[in-house]
Amino acid sequence: MKTSLKPNITSLSDAVLDAETRIRPHIRETPLDRSHHLSEAGNCNAYLKLEHLQITGSFKLRGAMNKVLSLSARDLEKGIIAASTGNHGMAVSYASHQRGVTPTIYMKNGASPEKVALITSFGGKAVFFGDNPVDAENRAREISQQSGQIFISPYNDPEVIAGQGTIGVEIHRQLSSAEVVFIAVGGGGLISGVGSYLKAVNPKVKIVGCWPENSRVMYESIKAGRAIDYPEQPTISDSTAGGVEEGAITIELCREVMDDSVLVSGAQIFDAMKLIMQKERWLIEGAAGVAVAGFLKRKEACAGKNVVIVLCGRNIPLDRLQAVFRGES
Image (cartoon, rainbow, N blue to C red; front, side, top):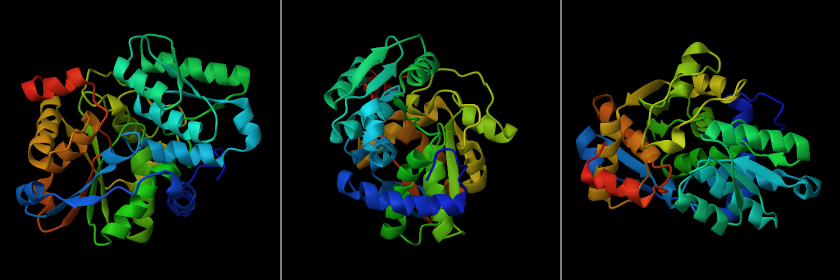
C-alpha cells in the first residue's frame, strides 16, 4: 500500500490483514481480559485490550514494525528518522534494530530522561531540538528531505495505520461479538486502523473516540474537516498530545469510522488510571486512562453490551505515576 494513496475503510481493512501476516512473528498478541469491576460499573461485559503489554510498552510497535518491514534494502541504506515524545520513538527504534538499522529519533529539549533511555536501549539515537514536539518533528522532516532518510510518521502513513489496525484483527478473533470499542485518539492512526478493520468485518460495531479536554486538536480538526491549530493545555495524556499534520489522511478516516466522541477532564483521566491500577493491578499511562475515562462517562449507554476498552500503553514516567496516587490532577 503506497503512502501517496488515501485509503478508505475497504482498502485499509485489506492492508490490515497484510500487516497482520507481516508483523505477526515480531510482536505480541495481547490478551483481551474481562474486567469484573468495569463490567459491574457499566452493567455490561467490559473487556480490556491489554496493549500496554506490547513489547515496547505501547501499541505503537505494530505500526512502526509494519512500516519498517515494508522498506526495501535500498530504503534501509538511506537510514530511518522519526520524531517522538516517547512511544513512537521506542517503537521505531525497536523495529529498525530488528533490521540492523540505528534510527535517529528527534525529541524536544527537556524530553523525559526515562523515555530517552528507553529509546536508546531499544537501539535508537536520540537527538534534541526545539522546545516542543512540533519543533522536533519539523526538524526531523527537514533533515529527512536533505539526507534522503526515510521519515516514519506516527500516524500519517497507510502502513503505520494498517499496523495499528492489527489490534482490530485480534479483538475480532478474541471477541467477535464486540459491540462498542473505546479508543484514545491523538493523531488518529490507532482508531483509523482498528475502526476500519472492525467496521469491515462488523458494520454494526460502534467505535468511540476519546480525548483529553486539554488536548483535542484532532477532535477539532475532524469537526472542521481539515487540520487546524487549536490551543493545547498540559495533560497527563502526553501520548495523544500535539498538532495534526496538514493533509493528514487520518482526519477523513476518523470521520468515517467514529460513531461517537468523548472529551474527558484531567481529573477523570487520573481517576481512571488510579482505578485500573487499584482494581486491575495494571500500570497504564495517561492515554490508556483516557479510553477508560471515556467508557466511564458513557457507561449508561453500554448497559447489556459487549464493550472493549483499549489500554494503549504503560510508559508513564515515575514522577507522573506518583502524582496519580497523590491525586494531583
